[in-house]
Length: 164
Image: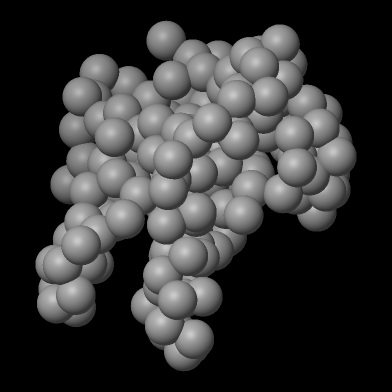
């Protein structure tokens, strides 16, 4: 069980702060069922998930794990979808988010950036997917390294070169 104040990774939402562990204060909710009340680091709103849920949750990586991860970024291959049909490309990259692996997020960033560069066109869907991958990746690294979220990209570039 996580503690109030702890930063955790929750599903595909990235880093969230556990603000409270309590029953939901809504009509029709079970009064004795505990929920994590979560606040995402990136974005707004509040998320609720039962403490005993099967949803993907884990602690944020340690500083040493973050440093080792950053050192390995140059070796991570881009995720390339060979199918050009829009719905297949979208599904290919969406499935990589579901692995909850930071390496897959870097693969998405590298792969979609290459795809955009090769096509020499703008794609709002690809750009949004890259942004989402960066938000999830950078939010965890920001917490692990205890640096400002806006400094993460330059920190990575300084330590191991730019992601792409």
